[in-house]
Length: 420
Image 1 (tube, rainbow, N blue to C red):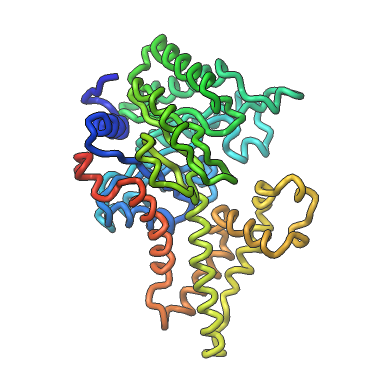
Image 2 (image 1 turned 45 degrees about the horizontal axis):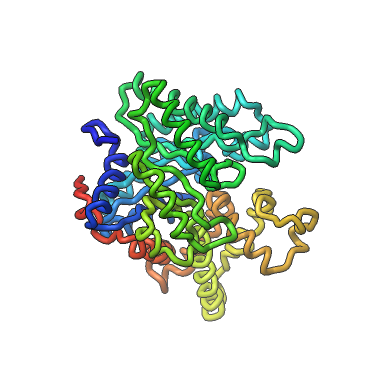
């Protein structure tokens, strides 16, 4: 594929990465931070500014959507907040992106039992909102199918069906974008999940070939995705990246002008191997929620000491409030192991409850009681610790910075010739 003047910025960036690698000039992996809280968003923008590097922000429909998601942001509000931090820290090359845009990938659609037509209608409305808000990339992911019955529910979605629905959603987005005169947008396709059916090489190749043929037939090759999501060893419970598989996938997608994107990069054991294997991008999300929780827990420990030296201080009880909010949300049930399905939350071990609260905290940061407890914590500590909020942000920033270093992203704006 050749680069054109009208190519979306992220597509141009990916092709620059391919060219640099081909000429032996540099090996770089782009980082996509999942903006699961205001503090994470601020920290990621800080890191982008301080490292002079591009930063992607991969927001799911659970996080950011027309109903506000669990962050409270609509797509327009999310982009506005991103621009606010960008101006505050003078950061360049910030790319708002949709992550996992497809049927039944918003939890509310599954809970409501939406049929195919209803969930596709909702997804298309969300794609339109993302385009109108100025997103730079849309991840099209129709790899969940809840129309099948019986044993078929446990088998991967057939590749022709994945291709068909991917084409439908890309065609809708391109028609909506063109009709409104909006600028070109980049695309990402595929999934790392087993249910998506793309985790073996034969299926992966069949998907690429079918998608290319379908886009060509629809005169939509200009919308060819810059990222293809690949199964590269990591998942929710595995942190070992497989550079051999990643290199094989790179060889498959590079001739199309695309790069492989890895999801489930949280806590990965060998992040420095990503650029060497040709990985174009990597998403990190739950790890930053855990770091935010740990930073707040450390502040709560300081608050306990403060209450000893200043007995009139009313404690925030933030951790107790967080646990209660997580319990009330029922979001913790999503992360139960099979043997825990019938166990009451109160009967789980303290360590397990802490893990569930830490993992599910991103869903309830905007809970009114949690926000009030957090503000009280900050107010209690303010006489001794001038800016508790920045203490939290800086701890998240350190975790993000580690990926920037491992992925070769320091001063990447200069390397990639990115200017504001």
